Length: 397
Image (tube, helix red, strand yellow):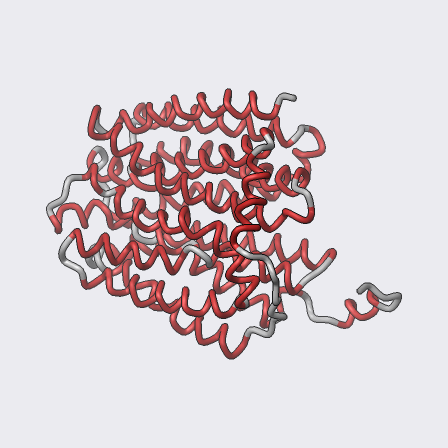
């Protein structure tokens, strides 16, 4: 309940970023985004060492993200009924153990199974870190915490490819050792996180029924589709196959791959910081549509870049698209969602994230198999334009 002396109470509290609870949440968020971007710079070396076809590299991303598709709609119910810690802590331990074990695998099939287990551990981390912010903060402090947590996520996404690329110069397996950090963070959650554990009474049948009602709204379905499409393009064309282009065409080492992959996150961070100004001039739907045109432009010009550092141009354009489009999707979801179904909608949206992450490498792998590396980026152009028209149809009432 809000009381008359609440402003005074909040003035005496530490800034959000100084609170141990928030710092632990940010640590969980950093683990949630480490599973793909830190290892993709090692993919070309991994393909050579294990003697696998480059078109199969996308499976390392697909098996990691697939559990989110299956577990996403269930995680919210389990966390409400059992408590947040009882889901987050085992997830962190599984993520850390299975992820670190990948570094010692020398068989591709074993590596895929370990990545699947790691993906099961990762499935709950991002959504529940956001849920914890909702549990612990209200009003302006919640908004501040959400913004700071998003910034931490962007910093992690930007830095992991560089870290992974540097480690991959020592050997393809070294970046796969990074998930061991999840184990001490799990202990930190056990002993350091002080959060109210809800005791919800929703059952799985009710949860899925509500999710079905949500999907009947054409506008929401358009936003879910746009969310999935973002990850199809990011994880498929950009994260999985741009490293292959850099290695095969420009003959660059993993460290250079990491720097170029990081550049898109820098563009996202800068663009997102200006989203408030843009939103005062343009509707969120306009910004989302513009993002898919920017994706198409960025992917179209990739094969025409004459030198390695010219790839910073499409990477920056792609990052600007994500910086204006993805937060705008989140804003529209919050605006359109009925309050009583907000958790359901966020969980379903998380499932669409997983669908995009899972399908992206598979679809682009098919394009690679049919026409080589350039076909991946041209397929991304066609997909971007297709989603532009799909989203336009879903949101024009």
